[in-house]
Length: 149
Image (cartoon, rainbow, N blue to C red; front, top):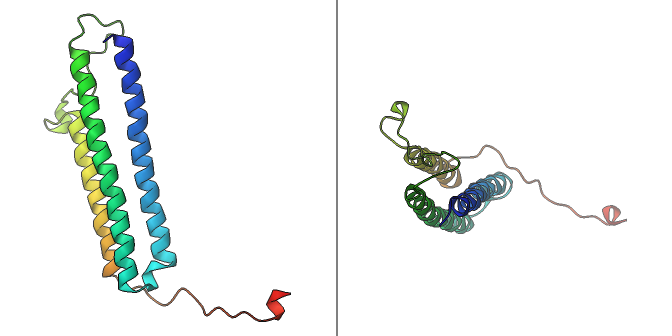
């Protein structure tokens, strides 16, 4: 595998990782909007269903990320087998700077992502099932013949 092929694969995989993170945040944002607008007054069965669907979506994104991680580390191995490199890039994210306390860039981003998504997930579980929302959001809907004109 050539240097250009490895770099092209890396660029494609980086785009996929960004897409997965973007879709994950989109799912979380949509859930927050649904929670505020509808789910906070919904019966527990509907809240359980919505939270289960969110969990399935995030689990799918996590599994997809795990697969992408395997592909990224595969390109690292292929890159290390190159004898000469025109770009003079030594490696991709496997450097262990002292300020990361022995973690590589990959490992640090994995830990940060796990902490962030774990905190968000636990917060959404609390807001869905335990938090007591003040007041009501929906006023009674009244349809009259005058409003139909």
